[in-house]
Image (cartoon, rainbow, N blue to C red; front, side, top):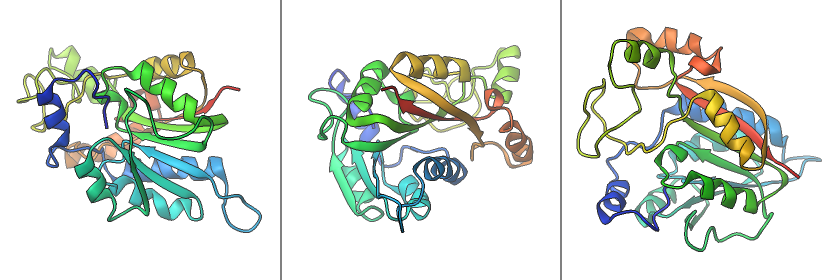
Length: 247
């Protein structure tokens, strides 16, 4: 999902293409879902069902991975792409079209208990406005679970020293230039752990926790090292941030 009010038509078309990869893999989705399940608590017995918005749900596969850990809570997939929502409906009971730009999301102020914001912020033209809108729809103390690639991942530090373009960064929407990999995914912004903490805090959230997750695109021989790097989030491939809306 991306803000589209000021995007050129070719960028809109790029994000509508169902062949464009939109997620960093099941391990990231599971780790993020566990963080959210711990934060919300059970929705059965004496627990209370919560409303969770998966903003930028894409085809719904990440939400489907998370759903078994969030049993009893209401998970709503939100995306601006009608094609993505059509595919998401095979995984999600509730889906709705919504944008972070323009008139904003079709939800009332303080109407959601949690927001999943997975692999979205790196695609946005205006991430500040996006977090403002997320803050609006979250109740005071509501949970934000954000994930994004780490510009300072362990291998990117080595690549930069060698004069190679970092993984996840892109200089073109047509092809990869100057870095490993073959897939163009439309990344416009990248964050380090420190930058992400500061950015989210400035947007009116209190950071609760920052964890790391592996990236499915790492070559197989290097995957054990990538998993080890998760112990130190500033070096991990993927950043998983849990924050709460400041009251």
